[in-house]
Picture (tube, helix red, strand yellow):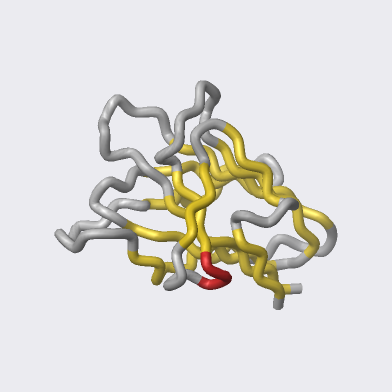
Amino acid sequence: LRYVPCRNSSVQRQGSWKVRKDSSVPRGSYCDTSGKGKRRSVVTYSFTGQKLQILQGKATSGGFARVIVDGDKRKQLNFRSKSGASGVAFDKLRTYGKLGRGTHTVRVVMKQTRSSRNEGFLAGFVVRR
């Protein structure tokens, strides 16, 4: 079992993904898409293990992202909270299993939308061997 925070140098962030400090999140930070970026907002992480979990946050300003593991589309991430609570709540682990042995690559690609409610929130990745 290994936890890799979104701010880790092995996690590549493109577009508007930005690191934010927050002591309530594991390892004290998370990434969100509130930054400015001209390219598509994508997080890429390569790992060795047979199962991956993504610790994601939810907020009323949340949007949706495609998850692509080794080139295959998987179940999307929903960052939108239906509650009216303020801030970001990190209490959701999305699991992607049965990956087989070896090295894998996951890409989290924010869906393009004109809505102002389209932020993504990632704390990190849990890799199980």
